Length: 399
Image: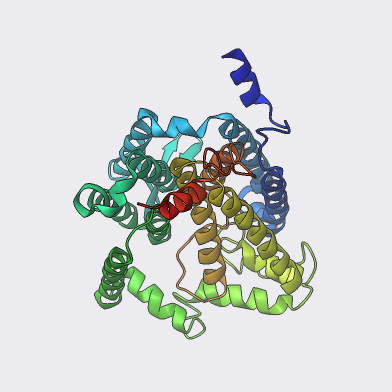
């Protein structure tokens, strides 16, 4: 027992060590993000707090806390998530979402997304994404055949997802709702969902989108506004128009670090949802491309862990975390480049904020723990190896 415990704590051991490349890539993104937050928030911080270091000091605290969370999560055996812990965490996430609709919910910018605990704000929607990953992974790893059973598997999973999505969308927080839905749908695909059910879920999504377009609501106006942001540059297209100006003036090599003009109270939330615009303006196309390359490398390494996971639980956990990071990167870059309507999604590891960073770091910690258990050279008899290879060998066996 003691030997097993010590082995689990051997962070840099040759056998059972984590994927150190993921650690390096995450560290690069967090450090780069901290630098860019200081640059992007410089004038806003002076305007609101009288000091240019307000956002910087907070983000350093968030980053250090996130590093501790990732470190601890990387040592927690991922099999703990197939226990009752996952049920408890999921219930906790739903309780936080419901608290938003009580006096405990804090409203800012016409959205009730936060619960204030003194000077600390909690975003239940962020924790719900992690809860969705854990719950979906546990549900289908407990009984892999559930993915082929509509009433016993798909209906409960999709139903629970819809409840969470509606609670989040009502805040309103469409970006987090869409991200959560994408995570669950992606994990259903990893678990082996039939294509006919994929078509049904996609159809429901299309119907929902058409309903939003025809509703004339806030989100409908945003969707129509993004089609021509400069026509609505003084209204709903203001953020996107300023973002495009920032990226366009950056050119190939950028204005230089700290030399952005748009961050000088022109572009709203330059340190948060639109920080990639400041990256494009200050570091140019080359700098923005470099950031995307690091994200691609990170997603590739996480996918590598997913494909080599020793069981379905590890595969779903790692896959869900990878989907969460990938979807948020795609959404954020698409928004700042006017490729999709503004949704208010943070750029993982780079945007300012504690909740989003902590959840992403926790997710990477889980991936790191799964990476400790991958087998690089599976045995021929199928006794070891990844879950996928075991499944393929099982299919090839004669009846």
